[in-house]
Amino acid sequence: MTIEESGADYELIRVRRDDDGNVVEPANYEQLNPYGHVPVLRDGDHLLREAAAIVMHVSDSFPEAALAPPAASRERAEWYRWIAFLSGTVQVAYLCYFQPHRYAGSD
Image 1 (cartoon, rainbow, N blue to C red):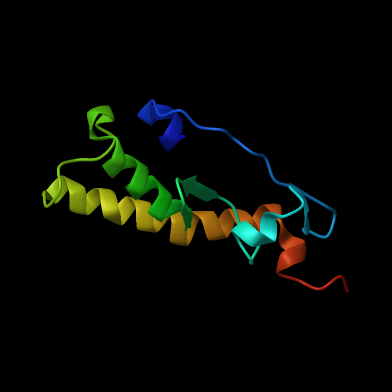
Image 2 (cartoon, rainbow, N blue to C red):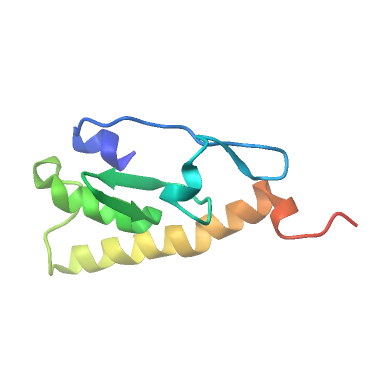
């Protein structure tokens, strides 16, 4: 969403998994992220993983899009807090709900 809002040109490549959660497409995805997690951003020759890092990088790379408050402001500190909360708390809860097989045995 951040890349879309930035106005940057990008190519979206969807990751498809099998019933066990293993990445099956694209075939070489583990070269981009050995853990198989999404998202991954390729920015030139730099690969960046972790959603929060990608949001911050894109926001800083396209300041004209005004996706983040000014650096060193109180608003920027709160922006960091929300990014950390969403990626470290909310996202984890959703993973447990939508992919319970990753967290519990089949018994």
